[in-house]
Image 1: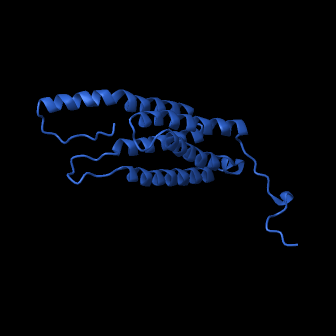
Image 2 (image 1 turned 90 degrees about the vertical axis):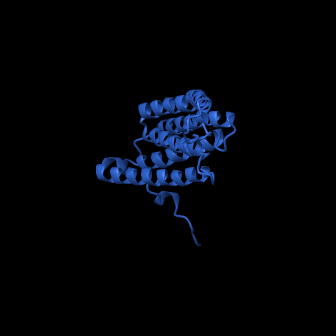
Length: 178
C-alpha cells in the first residue's frame, strides 16, 4: 500500500508554552482591534473596512503566534530572536506592499489620497503583531491612540483646512483620506 501521509504516531508532538486559550485570546484581541478601527473606515466609505482590517490584524497575529508557539524556540533565545525578527520583517514588508496599493497619487501632485488608509493598515498589522506576542499594553495603547487619531482628529483637521482656505494660506492641500 502506498501512504502519502505518515501515520499519526510518527508525527512529532509539538510542545507549546501557550495554551489554546491564550492563543485564542491573542487572535481574538487582534481581530477585535482591527474590526473596531475598521468601523471608522467603513463610516467614511474608505476601501479598507472592518473585515479587511480585522483580517490584516488576524494575519499578523497568527504569523506572530505561530513563531512564538513552539517551546523549542522559546528555550533558545537566539533562535527566538532570529525567528521573531524574520516574521516581523516579513509581515511589515507585506503590509507595506498592501498599503502602497491603497495610495493613488494625483497627477497634479497636490494630493495623495489613500495615505491614511495605508497608514491604518500598517498600524493594524502592528497591533496584530503586538497581540500575537502577548504585548497587551502595547496593543491596547496603540489601539487607543490609533482610534483617537482616526476618530478624534478628523474634525480638527477639517477645521484647520477651512481656516487655511479662508485666509488663503498657500500651502499644499493635505490628504482628504482622514
